[in-house]
Length: 250
Image (cartoon, rainbow, N blue to C red):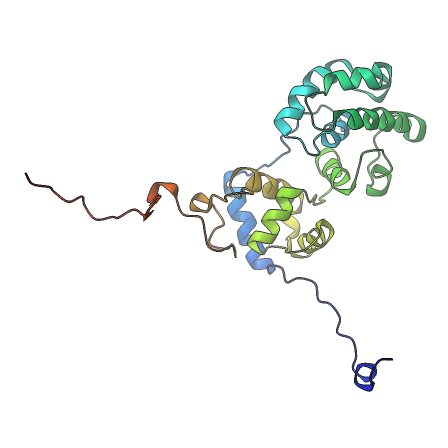
C-alpha cells in the first residue's frame, strides 16, 4: 500500500528534452545553408512513385548503392503498372546488391499493387495515406512529402537523429521525440530544407564513428565534447609541437 506522502505529493510531469532556442537554431541552419543553399536528397528519382520506391529501398543501404540498382530498375519500370508487370523476381534481380533485397522486392510489388487498387495508381500526398503502403514508415513518408510534394516535413533518419542529439539542437531518445523537438525549434523558413541539411551534415561531417569537428560549420554552436581535433595537428604521441625543430650539431 502506498504511504501517505506518496498519496499527497503530485506526480512530476516529464518535461520534453530542452532544444535550441529559435535564435540559436536560426544561426545553425544559416551556417549549414552557406555550404548547401538548396539541399536535396541524393537519391535519384523521376516521379513520386520512383521516389517512394527509392526511399523504401534505402533502408539499411547507402544512397549510392540504391542509385546503382534503381538506374536499371527505373529504366524499365517507372510506374506501378510496369513494376507489377516486372514481378517480384524481376525486381529482386535488379536490387540484389541492396541489403534486405528479398523483403524489399516483396514490398515494392505490394505497394505498387496497393497504389493501383486503392489510389488509382497515384502516390498519395498525406502522411497517413503514405504510411498505408507496404514498406513505407513515417520517415519514408516524410521524405516523399517533402521532396515530391513540397511539404515542409522533417524526416528523422540515423543521421538526423545523431546530429540533433550531438549538437543539442533537438535531443531525444526516439526518432519521434527528435522529430517533435525539431518541429518545435526549427524556424519556419528552414523547415523545408531542415532534414536535408542535417542528413548531409551527418553523412559528410558529423560522422558516426569520428565527427570531423575541425571543419564543422556549426562547431561553435554544438554541445558535443570533446571536439575531434584536426588530424594534421595530432600525432600518436599527442598534439604536435608548434616550436621550430631543434638543430642538431655534429
